[in-house]
Image: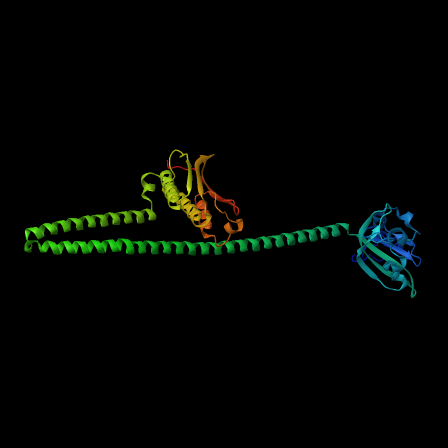
Length: 406
């Protein structure tokens, strides 16, 4: 009786006749990881193609050779790696399997490569007869890790530098803000002092003049009412007194007019509006030299045109502050002023022969006058430089972009 094959019967295994040792060898040769086996003396008994390729010798040339002496003899730093310390050999000597990724193997041409390896003892019939070692070249992984660490360190340094710069900039801005607040407070105090001075002048000078005029007017009014009661001789004397009183009133009025003009000039010189910046600067310099009793060397080559009103006023106020500083601090005997147009910049140089000042005094946070002049110059798009030394006088240079009124 014939028997038919069951359709579910699996097909025959084409490798059924292949010895298991050969199948294991084929399996090991198919992997990219190096694998070799050693006996109790550390000599190679088997190595797959990937392992031989990484070491740099044919597999047949490696059989029977001591693998520690061939590929594990030296540390990465060049120091000798004693065989007694080798974790690979300890796998079969002490029954201690291991897995490491911080060592190197050496190629036949003397080059090393970073390696990750594991070593396990081979036990047959209850006794250790060798070890099997699997290893992989991790040079690329190490390089990537080093690159990543370098990038991380660079980023950390950059962040640290950025934080320091931000902290420094924050300090600078804080100091600048504090200086700005102090300058604002100083400017407000200056304005208040100026208001107080003007109010005092109006009260003390104009007020007294107006009171005197009022008394004279009352006197005239009273005397005019008595005209009909006097004899011709007394009337003549009274007319003479009235003429004297009118002359005195005229002098008082002239003085009041002069005082009003002076106060108005202090507030805003009319010459600046009527004759322009150059005439106003010269007038201010002459007035200062006369009142301070110092020699004046005035040199001004006016460029064609004039600055806008706001810019002209700023330049004039800077010039006033310069003269004020000379009068208060310099104890100078002469003053030289040079004004002209140079390479598209309006330049004003003021040089005195006074006692001068130390550089740190000019940069002091409380040097509000200097700070105010520099701030005015910055608002005009210009710059102000001061050179001074104790006993050598001072020189103030103001430079403003020349943009005349069209």
